[in-house]
Length: 250
Image (cartoon, rainbow, N blue to C red):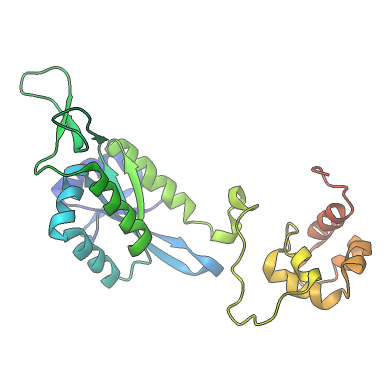
């Protein structure tokens, strides 16, 4: 695992938390690493972490957007913002609806949640994070402390080492997007074939060109399926079992 980290004094705690996975250097963001995108294309993932008061300040001065432009200028493909620190929505007569964070008074033993300064509504803070996600395309994550931030960065690193279509945990839901040049409704054969494990949208075209009907597709044995380009014996066997209701989930 190779995670490049900013060597600035403010990022020394992150370097320590990442331990052997961190490679400190002069950097355009707090951390970055290489990954894999759709079709195996290389990706550069940039990570910026900010404490809650700092994020709130960015809402007023636009500094985060300037940092995102700098990240883009350095050819990063994915921007991740990690909001570090606990925060809540205040209640009661004095804090009602305000963004509050933990603070320990001088000489005190326990933390108390108090409004950040200058005061900001909790709803405005959450709206800003939502806008970053929805309108700007940033990946927004939350962390309680630097240790959790390091764990999130490691998880992101592992995630981006596999191209999207190969993530098994979302295999049931994720499908390759349809080609933008597809101008006619796919045949029934293709629509059925794309739902089969190991076939998907990409190989469904090959299936559609080979079989004249869903009936022919269902009656074919594993030997015939394995003759199709890109479909091996293991996939062919699984497809036949699925079509005949013989799989483990039948």
